Length: 216
Image (cartoon, rainbow, N blue to C red; front, side, top):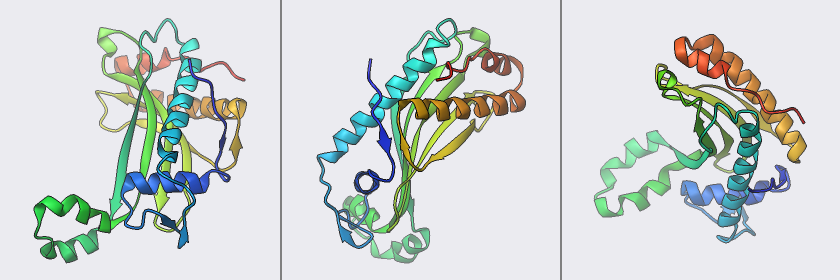
């Protein structure tokens, strides 16, 4: 079982910006806002460990309220979504002739992006409600030359519904374990209410059976 590690968005912003710039493939990977970065590649695994550890700690807290319905632990994942300057891509597409070097060429067109660190689990284990999952995590957004915006979000996925139903909250300050749990409980509550309103049938029943974690 992992322990929660405090997140200080303002203090750690340069660190997070460097890690995101590495993952998103920014052309100038060691400069942000025109200033040389004091961070290094060694910061990347530490960021993964911290965010993944926090996901595990928060997931265990959620499972404590859903031991009967949730029989599988949360699975932690991450997705990288680079934003490309599409106008520039189309303008210069004819100049890219070496297909083997194309991945390296693409980095020149990266204009920002986001990285999701999240955890997902099915709710509950029932044949009729199969395909209903709960997801929560951290959404880190970086724009060229700007600081990182950090969001805490949750969403419910149903096989009968194309898009997930969820809610997010921007984290702007220092968040210790008690405060992050308070925010996450509120985010889960709003996501659950929206999902119950939008979904129907067995998926709505499954979500109604999901219990919010105990208030801190």
